[in-house]
Structures are given as C-alpha cells and as structure tokens.
Length: 497
Picture: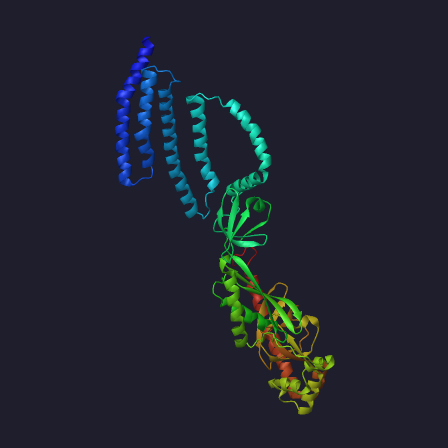
C-alpha cells in the first residue's frame, strides 16, 4: 500500500505542479515562435493546447485515482493523448518535408520524390491507428488481419493492372529517371514532364497538349531524357547545295550560318560533314550544340533562314526547285568541265618565270598541261613521289613545307597565283619537300619532260627554274640545320645544356 500511495503521490505532484509548469513553458515557447513566424509553432500549439491537458486527465484518472483502463473516460483520455501526439508529429514532419523539398529543388535541381516524402506521414497515421485500436480500445486485430489477407488476395487479382501502375509509379518516384520540368521522349511522345503521381505521368508536348502516360508503360519503355546533368544537346540539320560548289566553300558557308544562329554554342563548336556526293546535289549535315533542348526547333528554323542569306554572300548557290526537261549528252557534258587550250594558256601566263618564253613554247606547255583542283590541307606535290612535273598555281594559296622523320613540319615558302612548284624530286638530307594547299586551289600540271625540252632551248627559263630550285633547297637545308642544332642543345632529361 505504501508503494501504491507513493506512486499516486508522485503522479499527483506531476499533474498539479509539473504539468502546469510545462504548459506555461510551452505557451512561452509558442509566443517566441509566433514572433519569429516559425513554422514549428503549430507543433508547440498542439502540445500546449491538447497533449498536455489530455495527459493530465489520463494521469489523474489512472495513476492517481486508480480508474480501470477499460473504462470510457480513460479510453477517451488515452485517445486524446495519442491523437495529440500524432498531430504534433505530423505538424513537425510537414515542416521537415517542406524544407527537404525546397533544398532538393533549389540545390542541384533534383526534386524530392513525393512518394518518399509521403511515407513518414503515412507511417505515423498507420502506427497511431494500430496502437489506438489495439492498446487503448482493446480491439483484437488478428482476425481482422486474417480477413484482410484473403480480401487482399482477391483484390490483387481484380486490380492487377492498377497495382502494376502503382508499383511502377513508386519505382519512378524513388529512382527518379525523370522529374517534372525534364524534356523526355517516350515512344512517339515527346514533351516536358508536368507531373508524376502514383499511377500516371503527365507530359505536355510542343503543341501544348497534355498527354497522360500510365506509369506501367513508362516502366516498360526506353526513356530518352534530354534534360540531364549536362544540358547540352546536339541539333543536326541536313542541307543540300549545288554539286558545282567546292566542299570547302560550302562548309565555310554553313559554318558561318551556324555560328550566326542565336542559341548555338561556340564550345563545342558547330561541325559540318559531307553525307552525299551525287550530281546535281551535295549533301551536308550540320551539327550544332545548344544548352536547352526546348529551343531546338527554333534553332533549326533560324539556321535554315540564315543559310539562304549566307549562300548569297558566299556565292554558294543552293539547289534550284525548277525542273527542266532536256536531252543529256554525257560526252559533251563531261568535256565541258575540261579547261580549253586558251584557258590553260592564260593560267600559265600568270607565272612571271614563263613570261620570257615564246608563244610557240607557251602553246606547247598548254597542250601538255592539265588542270586539277585541291582542297584545303591536301598535298599537291611531294618529292617523295619522284615526280618532277611542274605545278603552276592558278587560284588559291599554298605553302612549300619540309617534312620528315625527327623534324617538325616547317613552312619554307608561301605560294600564290602564278607561283611555280614541283621540279624537285631529290630529298633534302632524307627529308621531303611538299606543296600543301592552304585554301582551295586550282592548278595546272605540266609534264616534266616537256618543261625540260623547252628549258633546254631557253637558257633564260632554265636559269630561272634552276635558281628557284636552288633558293628553295638552301632554305630547306638551313631550316633543317637550325632544327638539328636546337635539338642537340637539349639533353635527354629536357634541361638545356
């Protein structure tokens, strides 16, 4: 009895003294939270206004007065305590979940999955209901669970498609392969993700229509996510130009149009590749990078408009839509592309070294010449090929370079229209002399035996060609000697001697 009386006295002190003090402290804390506009004020208000009074009633009835636990007043008081605790916990969880959602949204751009944010609150509700029925009201839930198991089996068979969608939604929300705001493509559906719930995903396409896709379909499909950690996306536009345009000029025109298009990134730079070589059309593919997939259609449209203007400024004609019916003569069309004797003669006359020869010798060179075109970076002539044919540059620019094993490729001379190359088949100290195109070049090639025959009759021409060859060879030897000297001054460890 003494022990029971002591316990009752202790609980009486708690109800009479401790609980009022805690209520006063909670009221003071609630006022502090109100002044600071703290979101935690809701939890403290529930504790002060509901939890502590219900706890005081329960403590007064059970430990102090010794009322039986299965009586209605005790059960009502216990229900109030449990519900107050659940409400306070839910209020605190609401604040924590809100801050978590905000942090994940403004931090790295990833949104917190709503399913995971909902699970703690759902667990509080289920736990509260279980304890309330089992412990406070004394309801035996074992039979109810048995019936629920049989019912769940029947429901699972009847709603297997719906449950599959729910499971897929839970996986999507937890794994987060896509999130609201992401641009995605699922099958034939492309658009921005508006919302993801437990059963469906809403995608708004470029027409403004909202397409509702079941999550089960998303879970079983390949999803292309255009919004990732790297937001850059490549936009590919096929373009056709007239076959007569040199590829170098066509590429330059298309690159200028790409770089002038608003939204196209300079890094990585746009790129143009040849995809079709078929008279009367040349096919190209322009690859541009943007940092927002949503602007890809606008970029394609702006680029297409700029191509028209750039083609006129670069004098690179686009294919004509007109269709004419004509009889094609293949032999005549093929021979029309071959330069005439007069055109070859005019090209050779540009060279100052050939100005001293007679008209008959110039005609002889023109008869023995042939025209050729070279793109940027191609080698026009190389002493390693043992060819001593004379090369006369008609249009464009080229450079004479020294190259070989153990030596850096070095430019010996710049060549412009009218300049002569070739005629040197010997190597320079086991290194080769080569002519490389700096721009697109049109040249005239004359066989070496014709040049040697004419030079044997013209001492001025022979002397000029020998002098030109000697000057270039000396430059090559001097450059090679300087490189060898520089390399010998640097020991193996890279420290200058």
